[in-house]
Amino acid sequence: MDWFAADHSWIARMLFQRSLAAVYVVAFVVAANQYRALLGDHGLTPVRRYLGAVSFRRSPSLFHLHHSDRTFLAVAWIGAALSAATVAGLTDAVPLPAAMAVWVVLWLLYLSIVNVGQTWYSFGWESLLLETGFLAVFLGNDRTDPPLLTLLLLRWLLFRLEFGAGLIKMRGDACWRDLTCLYYHHETQPMPGPLSWYFHRLPQPLHRVEVLANHVTQLVVPIGLFLPQPVAGIAAAVMIVTQLWLVTSGNFAWLNWLTIVLGLSVLPDAWLAPVLPGSAHHAAVGTSVAFEVVVCALAAAVVVLSYWPAANLLSRHQRMNTSFNRWHLVNSYGAFGSITKTRYEIVVEGTADDRPGPDAAWQEYEFRGKPGDPSRRPRQFAPYHLRLDWLMWFAALSPAYAEPWFRVFARRLLEGDRHVSRLLRDDPFRGAPPRYVRALLYRYRFTTRRERAETGDWWARDRVGEFLPPMTLRGTRTAGSR
Image (cartoon, helix red, strand yellow):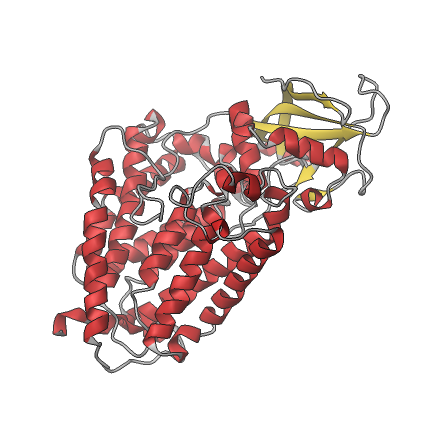
């Protein structure tokens, strides 16, 4: 079929597939590195216990067939290795059926992890990776022309991602409508980056311009994705630049990077060839009837499944980051429908003293990414995802987010669990467990320019209350709140 091929997208397809595989590498490595502490048999929320409570039908996963710590780690490392091989060009070096099988395996392995990941895998970028990865199955390789239908489905996904995020903002917090949300966001976002202090200190009129530009990018520009080139490419380029701006201002795992990857699939080869040395124009090689039939079936299925996210976009009660099926296909997306105006942080402390009284010597546990020591500058971690640090941000918003894992986390610190300790920046007790652990709640804010010059601190903080009273292995008390 002449209409089936997108002759202008050979380089775009290659760049999209290699970049997507790189995101897969990060996702699988994160799963392998953090599994034992979070989901292992002695983790905070064990997968084995979860599998005993849910059926395969409710949460499809290969781990329903067999699960052990070694099996999970094998799945994660196999996924990482296969992803790395794909970055190196594996899927273009094998026949089309084998290339499709590689993408199916990557999707199935990560789906199996996400569907048993519980609260640690409840973020929108998990579903985004799965939906994007599933569509990649039907993009073909160098032995077939780029299928126009699949590329259009990627644009539909990018449209829903951006347009949904724009609508949830306009329907949500009033500060998005009066253009003041960025007065707070850079300071209160889940995990600020090394430049977030500087972004926060930009003049307020510029913050208002940022918000307005965001609305244009998310509510107007996405329409251009469905227009002919070069308009579609210009729309995608605007989104890519916007996402790079977000990358420099915070840590959002691979959300921004995956959005950029989707944008790359829209750029015309005429733009990419001059900036990618070694890339060459491909002559049409045709496509098999079987592949065309499969891609058409995919398109029809996506059209049907799009009813629910499309209806969600039109609803006054729009839900963000929602999967309407257990396979995480054709989802709804969105972020920051409401903006936190005040930042709270949970500071976890331990003491080796016999009594946890006012004279006890308490030492703080420092996390890798979330704010702690006011003098420590925020770091850049994205696209790597620090799952514990993110959940600590949610727990500080409400103790309800800390159930059922926070008490177990405190207990593991008391036990000197080495897997949990590896999730932290450092262990003040050097592997020797403390006698007591407690958690305090603080209000954090970025220092002013004067405070920064005088003290060198990036943060100023005030104690608000007790989040978890002193806890010991001999017994626990009821967790406190603000």
